[in-house]
Image (cartoon, rainbow, N blue to C red):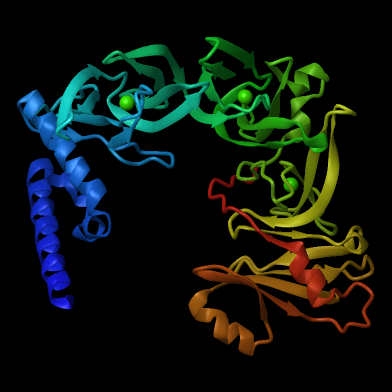
Length: 451
Ligand SMILES: [Ca+2]
Ligand SMILES: [Ca+2]
Ligand SMILES: [Ca+2]
């Protein structure tokens, strides 16, 4: 018995390796993303894709280059699923015919399986751009929307087409342009809308598309934009869902506009409440985010720490996290913190520290030290030290521990380490629980521009 399993194993392995070699020959360099290792782990998907690929080559009569989505969770050149509701899977393949040098549009083929299990090309069309930016497939009230974002030869211009596959025909039901795209249930109806953010000149428009009712709601933001930095979907205070769009304005600062819905239509909260957008103005890199994981997206604004006079070059900034309160129509202060976008952590200041503590940063190591502010002492570096926070590469953790630092949060390649300087009888000193519960690991941000 063990012997026959071994033989079967050997046979399978050979078949898979053979398939991998055929695959490599068929697709040229594109196939390098499919390692033999992956094929061994998931032979069925790879076999199916190889069969689909082969059927497509037979149908087009020439070799093809697969086109892979650049962004998003779905990064395969194949989509295998039931896209017409007949309970059997179809396959979508993104590709360009090989052998052309000039920029040409990506093509999309639909293949279906006959009763013998053989794949046949059913339909194919030219896409709306020269590369695939992102692919999403979404069920919306029983119909399947195939959402394809295309890159174009123009910098910063992406196009989106939404397709339906019916009676053997793949047809576009919507074409548009976008800068950023996501599927978000922005109106809490239970189904995701296709939400796009696009910049045209200095205007930024947010659109929500409901394919079921062929309904598009669109709003223009107030800010005059030189770029869109990013967006976050989350909650306002009082649980309302909202889209927070970070825009680089004409002063090269970041501002945030909040888009939500009212009676199923998009609205911009700053316009509803005549709230000036410049109130959210801060340096680039300080993105809106749910830093504390409570579901509410906070917008950071900056103020300098005590002891850094306005005229000082490179002051240290305190980050105030604000949350939009729909009831008062304004941003409300939630927490004061030290936030390091480059190191990727937030240290929330305990209430008893606010107005009593300032910070020194070691420009070389980026380590920061909180000190007890004393107006009678001329230099901040001579004030009573409380704690230091350092982000330490994995290989240096040991030597920091020898120097009195403790690991508070650890990641795969680095750890956040803290050293305490003052005794516990110092009223501003924190317990180790207070320290660890006030440190939040957040996404790093590289595009920091201090004005
Ligand atoms: Ca089907
Ligand atoms: Ca919805
Ligand atoms: Ca939050």
